[in-house]
Amino acid sequence: MLTNKIIKTSRTLKVFALAGIASAVSMSVQAEQWRGWNIHPPSYPNSMALESFAEEVAENTDGRIEPKVYHNGVLGAQPDAIEQTRNGALNFANFNMGPMGPIVPATNILSLPFIFQSPDDMYRVMDGDIGERFAEALEEKNLVALSWFGSGARSLYNTDHPVTTPGDVEGLKVRVMNNDLYVQMIDELGGNATPMAYSEVYQSLKTGVIDGAENNYPSFESSGHYEVAKYYSLTEHLILPECLCVAKSSWDELSEQDQGIVREAAQNAAVEQRRLWEERAETSRQRVLDDGVEINEVADKSAFQAEMQPIYDDFVASHPDLEALVEDVRAAQE
Image (cartoon, rainbow, N blue to C red; front, side, top):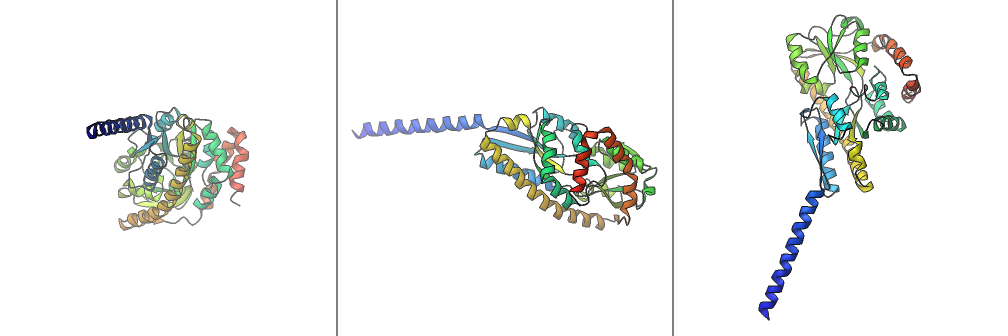
């Protein structure tokens, strides 16, 4: 009798073990492996926030979704990554709105020079109803914007002299992101705009292919551009939001429950990114100062703003359907 009980117990344990293995295999098969694009190094505020997003999604979906972030742009340049996310080859990404303009025309409003008065104004606008209107425009192009990251204020830096008036830009070859608005911005100031991949900027500054570029403190510092461009001038001409975007095809495959989990994780990531950004911006500023960079205040930004009026005029003439949204963005900051 005892032997029979042992045999039965052994069989029962085998059944449970096999069931456990089958369950584990089933969970493995069902787990959705998500690939995420990021242009920044792992230590960057955006990168750390994206890692938190990935961890929270994996934990709260019990492994049904397993996001992995690929840093340093290893999955391609930003324009390519945007297309890959739109067609579902990538599942999620952190995109700057600058290169988004050619694909989603409404986002060009965010690239109009001096459209935002401060980063806080930008956050308030993008976290509200106006931000939802931009999210709707992105979704029409198969990108679901779940939250908005900050990227500080972008300013001009160059190798030869400080920029304190529009005339100081005249004749300079300045790298810009791939967007006609940025080309026009530099042209209006008398410079020569040079669209170029971010990865090529350091060597181009070093060899004199370009005289300068424009970006925020953390990018200026983390890229090493401060090593060759010793003049950083606080024009603060662009305050660009960034999105944590999910491919619409990936989003539509999620259950309502998992959509809620992913959205909440994205919003939590935005809170973390903004906090880390402020900390990193101050650290980067001090680091470049310690390395001998001359940071120049621009006493009168209105002179730069006045030079930008033709850009606004041309934009509204070319996109009359977006004029109301331009005015709404401005009015929301009054």
